[in-house]
Image (cartoon, rainbow, N blue to C red; front, side, top):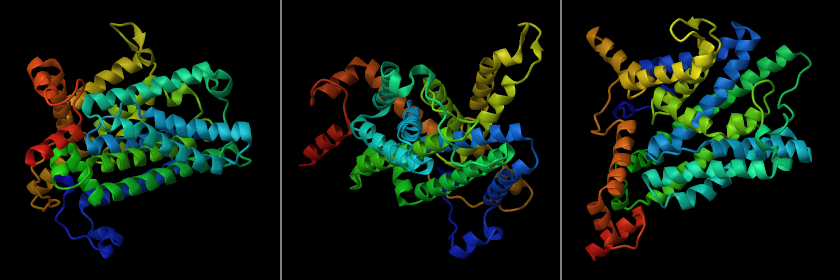
Length: 408
């Protein structure tokens, strides 16, 4: 992504001095500071909603770490949110484990789930991988229903102990907001550090051309598994802390596991700007608060004779489609691009960026999926693929093995 490839030589002094940073970075820091000051200027109910929005933004960032950077779309990312949340809640409710320790264990188990699902699934590519990630949470939901005595079935479990407890409920609300805010900032910095490192560059290269990465002597599967486990651990951490937040989250399939949750996190990430980490953070906050606002509007639509609150999902879907149509690169990219144009027109130099010739993450990912579907629907291409291999979808390791054999 060209916007992320700056030619500036960042030094530690630059990083500690906000005035030396690019304008968009200064605005980002200002936005985080304003987010930290919000509880001082809004009522308690709004603070609760913002707390839920922060956890949803953490979840969106975790999805972006694997799907936005490597281009491997996960349609069932709620699985890791659920493993973290349910593991932590069960340890606290059934075994009396302290909530803080239960959160740590839940995070580890979510990372293990990332390995269990990711290692076999990453032998496949594109829509095949997406299908596996889509089926996994559906299987888990059926397990919850069958073993309802343990997992509470479709109604879920009762709320576990809170991570922070105080005598005054107002203090509990504010403290839990800042706990969620601390997690949001931590995950944002962590994923920015990883995705701006050499590992992040490999993630992006895998999304652009996985075979080129393999040709360079790197193992794409190793980096994809790393991204998958990191993403699962972050999602599990968010889910575990979410269920220990009173009046905001609870260990129920409707909040963690249902397919809608996994789809919503994809929409939020694409809206904000897939493949940027910052975009899904912004998109997660925007999506959660806009959806909540629309669901509370009581005005009646004249032609349909129905209140807006009853049509919230329909109206929100229309707004989402419009935003995706006019802002295909996401909100963050649109703001950066137009901000640079405005600076250029005003005679000021914008942030220097180096063209890399790459494509937008969404465009590149959709192109890869389109090519995979063409393989599925074109009999001649399927026939060509089957000739050197056995029946079934071609895998990346099979392709590379054939190329290596050809070279020998």
